[in-house]
Image (cartoon, rainbow, N blue to C red):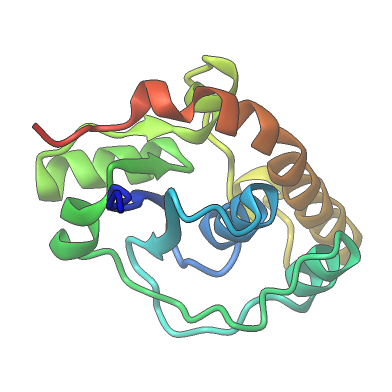
Length: 166
C-alpha cells in the first residue's frame, strides 16, 4: 500500500484574520472540497481579538460557505514555516513578513492574475467606512465575491508558487 504524501499547506495572511485572509481560507476550502492534498489556513499579523463583521459572515453564508468554525489566529514563525504557500493579501502584510520573518511572500492577486496588487482592507477602500455603512457593506460584499470567484484561478496557479521541500 502506497503512503500518500503529506498535504501541501496554504496560509493566507492579512491584518486581523477576520475578513480577507479568513474569507480566502474558507473560499479555497470550499473550492477544493475535501481534497486531502491541501491544508488551508489563515492568520493575521495583528489579530487583535475581535469578532468577524456580521456582513462578512452573512455574505459567506449566502455563497454557501459557513465560517462559524473560524478561530482568529496571530501569525507566528511556526505557522509561516509550516506553510508551503504563504500568501499576503496586502502589500503591508508582505512587507511585515519580510521585515519580521525574512521571508518573501506572493500577493493573492499575483497568484491569481499575475498582478502585484493588494486587496485593500475596508478602511483603505472606504475611508469614511465608520460614517458610510452602505459603502462598507458594498465593499465587504465585493471582497467576499471577488475572493470566491478568483479561487479557480488561484487553484490553477498555486502549484507554481509552492515551496517544495527538498
